[in-house]
Length: 141
Image (cartoon, rainbow, N blue to C red; front, side, top):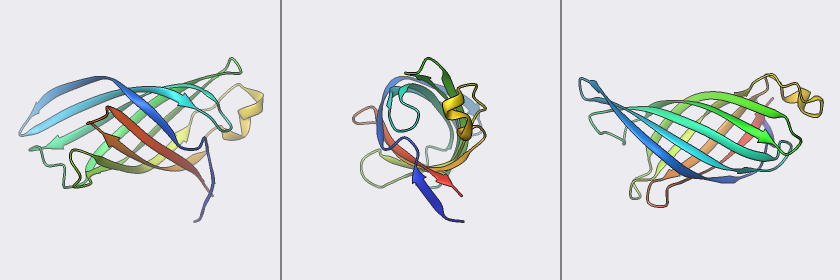
């Protein structure tokens, strides 16, 4: 299945807060809260949280993550999204590459109705040195 057009273009979001929870057995849940502007078909201010479960501090192996976010649209509406995938250290400092899928939640904004339940492939890079995440999503046809 091919990937189609970019949905929102590349954006950079700033880390707002981090929480770590010891799950026992060498596992730690890390919650990363980000905020930033998005453009493209759904412009506005986006808020989102990545939740990763790291085992024994090993970021070289794929780390499962979940994501939940929402964009407060410049049109006055809102658009939520949820997703999941894997993160993995890039070997450059503490940077991590994030790859996965996201789904737009149903929206009541008539201009964005076509995005309701749309699935997209995403790729991003988390950079703890700059407290940013930069990413892009593509419609999955």
